[in-house]
Image (cartoon, rainbow, N blue to C red):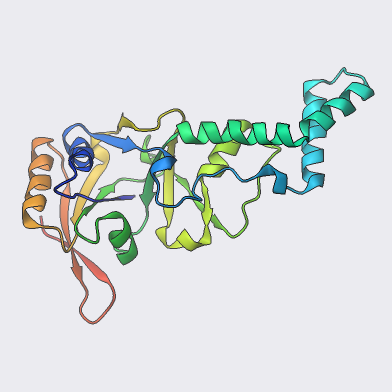
Length: 247
């Protein structure tokens, strides 16, 4: 698993997030509100959900919630549940949970030139490598993002699953990211410990300034991180990168 990071010399907050990875073995879990895609992690308008789906959900919900109610009361509760106000209230509840979640975004490729451009300060940043094996108790929790053209809403699922679906569904425009996410409910904007042994490598962007590269190398040494160091280099004659081991 890879985490692309910008490392601008003038942004002390972002520098501190990088320092925490190496010195404290902690990762910053941002809120979706800081993401660059305004459509990301947004709960869709339930009023656009087909009426037959909403009605079926309401009937099943009422049957579970009020199994002994009279038929008249059940019909009344169904009507109330499918009202505009109720559907919007339900959407807002799920959106509130999504906004409160801490979301760590990871990627499978380490050499994607768009990822380096968009998330590593135009190739002036770095990319951190973690052991993402399925049996790992931290990065093994990462869930794959699904890329779709249509954003269906699972009304019949539990609220926790609805929250996860909102976080793990993105437009096909972003499919090149090959993204995985670790979700921490109510963990937005928190630093969270990870097992230091799972930090396995550092890749320097091919435009990363030497002085910033030296800072990261020093932090890795001070944090006693056992990592391999790599350098990203343009591949001759191609729009591509080679990732070369340097230490």
